[in-house]
Structure formats: C-alpha cells, structure tokens
Length: 382
Image (cartoon, rainbow, N blue to C red; front, side):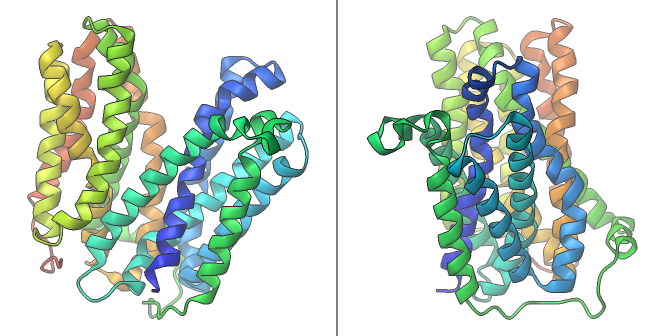
C-alpha cells in the first residue's frame, strides 16, 4: 500500500509535459511570438538544471518524503493561480517555473523514495512501472489540455480549463503521501554541495550522470525531429505523424509499463544492455533514410528508449543507497541534456544532412551500450 501514493506522485509528474502543447493556446491568448510562447516549456526544463542538485541536498537534510510533499505543494499552488484567475503572462511564467521546481523535487525525491517503500528486490521493477505511470500522466495531461474545454463547466475558462483538475490531483496526491509512513535510507552525515559533486569523482557515478544527460538529449531529439525528417524521406504528413511521434511515444509508454514485468525475469543490468542495444539499432535504422527501415527503427527506438532511465537510475543508486538523494539530484540535473543535445542534431539538420542527423541519438545510445557492459560493485537485484 505504501507504493500507491508514490505511483500517484509519478502520475502527476506528467503534468509538466502538458506545458508544451499548451504553448499554442497561450500564444493566441497573449498574442505572442513562437519564441515567447516556447518559454512555457523552457521554464520547466531550466528548473531541472537549476534546482536538481539543491533538491538532492534538501532531501538529504529534511528527508525524501518531506521534499515530495514540498514539490506537491508547490505544484498545487502553481496550478491554483491560473485556476482562479487569468494571470498576466509574466505571472503565468512564474507559475510555470514554480511547477518546474515542484516537478524537479518530485523527480529528485520520487525516484529514490521508491526504493524505501518497495519490498526487497522489487525496486527496479517498481521504478520501471512508475516511469510507465509517468508516461500515462504525460499523455493524459497533454490530452486534457484540449479535451477538457469541451465540458460545459470548463468552457468559459478556455485554455485554463485543465488547471483546476491538475490542482485537484496535486492535492489528492499530497494527502496520500502525507498519510504513508516511510523508513528512509539516509546518509550518516548531512550532504553538502561539495559532497554531492564529489560523487562525480567516482567513475561509476560520473558515467551514469553523463548517460542520463545523453539519454534525455536523445529522447528530445526524437521528439523534435522525427516528424520533419520522416516527411523529408518521403512519408506523407499523416503517415509521418502516425509512424513518428505518435508511435514513438505510444511505445515509450507501453515499454515502460511492460518493463516492470520484464525486469521480474531479467536482471536490471541485462535489461539495460538490451534497451541500449535496441536504441542504437533504432536510431541507426532511422539514419539510413529508407522508409521501411525507418519505421522499424521507430519501433526499436521506442522500446529501447523506454526503460533506460529506471534501469540506469536503479543500478546506480544500488551502488550507494545511503547517497540516493544526492545521486538523484545529480541525475535529475542531467535532464538538462534535453536542452543541449538537440542543438547538435538541429545543426546537422540545418546543414542538410537529412535523416543522417539521427547519428546524434545513435551516438548517445552507443555510449549507453558501452557503459551497460561495465560491471558493478554489487550484483544487481530484481
């Protein structure tokens, strides 16, 4: 029963992903340029870069459960203001940044606290399943942004219609997490910036943080360039959307849910190796620029990308579970790879490399495959 509120926390993490699709409606409402409207998703991303390591330190001092509650409280407040009024654009950005900070705290605390509430040997399985739940939350939140305005009670709110529902979900999750009792694994001494960054001196942790940086960057590359590059190799727009972003993100969600089952019969380290290999194959097939191979590549990539985060995270935390909060902060900070790696792929696209630009996510996954072949200090548990 302890895991249920934590799974719910992963569900509401997906709300932040709805800020991208919301940008078009906000652009129209406020008469913004594309760049200004894109600030909604930018402010979510930048919060991860700025607040992840401090969040890990805070979790080490006040506890992961309290940080989870703080994140949920910030998210509820961020959703409450647009629920009650139509804010100015500056205030809306402040709310979105607050949502980003709250979601950062949810990620930083949620990933390691799952270990504390899971039965012995079930951490990797539960974390994989939790990422699937987060995927469902992302998909559902994105859908609700447009669909909920069809309900009479929310029609008058226009683009703000989903915010009251998001706020209510945050409050329900806050209550659920508050009611559970968690025996947390803690470090012997309170963490500091120095001790947190000092973990990067150990190769196993430095390699893992770089792995998360490249993984998130590769996933954002797929999200950004699948549609235009599939159209560029000759697919009609409808087919490119169907066999590109729609299928890729659908397979991500399915793969994450199935990952909780697969890791019951396969060790996390072997599952990590298989996932990395599928990712390399998928991105490599896309780079060929051949229609049929590209579609197969999307399938392989969707399944390969799905479980990199929970496998790499759980394997790394098992090296030093007493430093889980600091490690979580470092790895969540690496989510900033989603803002940087796509710039390299974008440069290749601008240079007219076409589908060959998929060598960027392929190279990211080649790195992940290499580090997956390294042994660990401890045998991985299922």
